[in-house]
Length: 337
Ligand SMILES: [Mn+2]
Image (cartoon, rainbow, N blue to C red; front, side):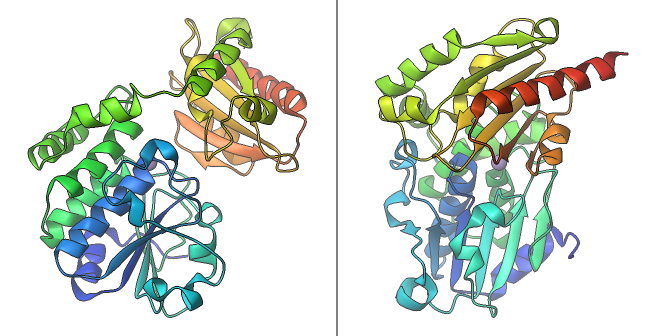
């Protein structure tokens, strides 16, 4: 397995190449998509050929981003059938700790193409031919911003906005523990380069559909605590999503904030029923030094110390909830004794 090559190696590779494909994990989120859109725009402005390709469509919440309508949604055989995808020199993979969530664009990639892995997950498997993983980076988009400047690519508001969005999303609007001086400096530079913070606020945080608001109400009603209130959990079923018209992409994911938002909690847990037959997705958040990535790694998932997830191959959401609550309570109690 390759070790880390770092920013300089990726910058040198980018200098000498062309015909780049850029992707993030499916479903796309603001960091993976923002990183890909920002670099794609900068490369195109420099006269290079670049396309963003994704295993899943752009979520409706992010379709307003500049360049989002040009994202190529993957269909099997794409490298053979779609001239925009033919004979790529490299596939840049953003914000993905492993290859599972990259889907077809990685699985069917011609062997002649270089896989470039740019990420900040502690659980990253270094799956690329070139790897640049910085666990301390506030967002992958902030890493891409450093790359754009190291290579000297031209920037404008359409480069800056999606990279700024990656910071807004991954730092929880500049509120989580990863809101470092470097994160705030990158944000300042991106605003100077043309990113408009209010545009993002209006699109992402003052634009919630009624179904999502109603889902939040259900999640509040379903809150349960354990370990003397240090753990709170709630859940979203697949039927909820269907009833509320929310079956697209990763909808419901943010309801983990309902659990971690409750006073007295250290750990928040959200269970989401996936499509029937696909199991149950668990999302953990921590607001203490309790390491939730450790639990998720033990179940084949991963993430960060304070935000991690895993998928359990069991459609019985209530049983998965009981088991994960019990495991988390045991770990919480072991930690304090
Ligand atoms: Mn990220």
